[in-house]
Image (cartoon, rainbow, N blue to C red; front, side, top):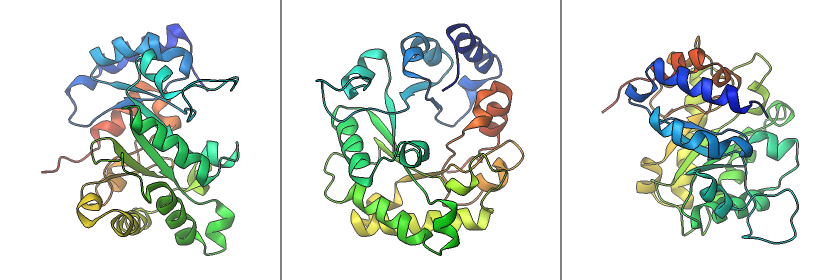
Length: 243
């Protein structure tokens, strides 16, 4: 929940001047709903796509305050987030709600970043694998509209967001490898092998290169560090070039 119209346009001007259109990575920004129509065209000019931070799973109706997938498309978005840690743990979204949102967004033609991750108390209780596996399997089981082109997973260890803590590169690699195994068990080995899995636990310019160098880490879901164009570009430049 950040940003204004003037600040959004200035941000995109700065991103373009810093070379956002020349990096090899795919870049997606998820601004507040109110800024998507303003940013979509300027973002494309800077080599950036736009997405919605959330959506509702029905097309229309008496759901005050909600945004449908078709409304996101109409606003100029091409991506959406489903299951972000703040939606799960601040707004108490269940696995069932996240699954409905994921399916609705994909069926509308949007591409989705599906977020999973454990709380500190779940980690301390030794339940990390149980929690994340449940989140993955409940979202993907029987989901016919998902492809490697429209679907990305982001692993967000909630205990590492805004706390100054970060999973070690070895921890991130281990969890990403397990997530890939669970995707394979729910979908197929081929689907899992080609699924992009991002890390989303307080990625910053000073830790990005080490985390992103791990073979099972295929990108980053960046939080606070993305609010500054310079620090965001530093992270993008830390992404290793791979065949």
